[in-house]
Amino acid sequence: MVVASFWGTEPKPVEVKIATTVLEKLPPLSIHGMSGWRVETVCSVRPKEFLNTEWQVNYHTLDVYKPHVKLRQNLSHIIV
Image (cartoon, rainbow, N blue to C red; front, side, top):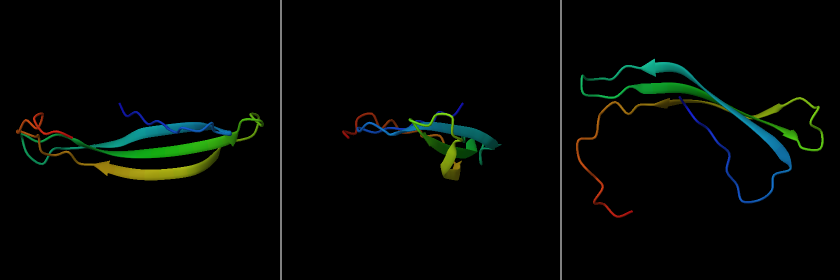
């Protein structure tokens, strides 16, 4: 499952709809690796005062996530 969200601190004059779809699961490169993903995200908007208007796409991207190697080191001691 992929979750996408829209964040901001100001009121937005538009309604926002975000849809993210997993297009492909990428196999791990090694037996100890993790799968990767190829995903598509589309963000559409429409004015709040005209809710009967069609959604307009204002962001469309294809992304590849490749966490192919499992982390074997515990990094919890690192202060961020």
